[in-house]
Length: 131
Image (cartoon, rainbow, N blue to C red):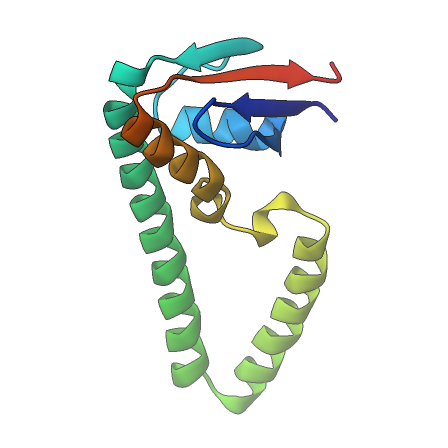
């Protein structure tokens, strides 16, 4: 599994799975390249798009949770038992999947790096490790 390392002279580096980075870049409408960077002057726009994508993903997660709770409240006892059993099975499957942590949560390290880079007026670079 390939990794992507982000680095900036204003912060320490961090590493993420390539698949996660590709999902983040897709969410903000940015093409992913093996190596690349964001110029310091472009970072406010990148951060704005990240924040918007994170807010949308967070809202989607809240909506799914609200729908789940509504089904539980309105369902019969038998339906509730079936749903809880199905959810338990889904949770077991999720433990082995990347989706157990929401995309908005995976964006946090990049958002933090960008905020610090903006303060120091420094670019952010990335490179793919372990092709």
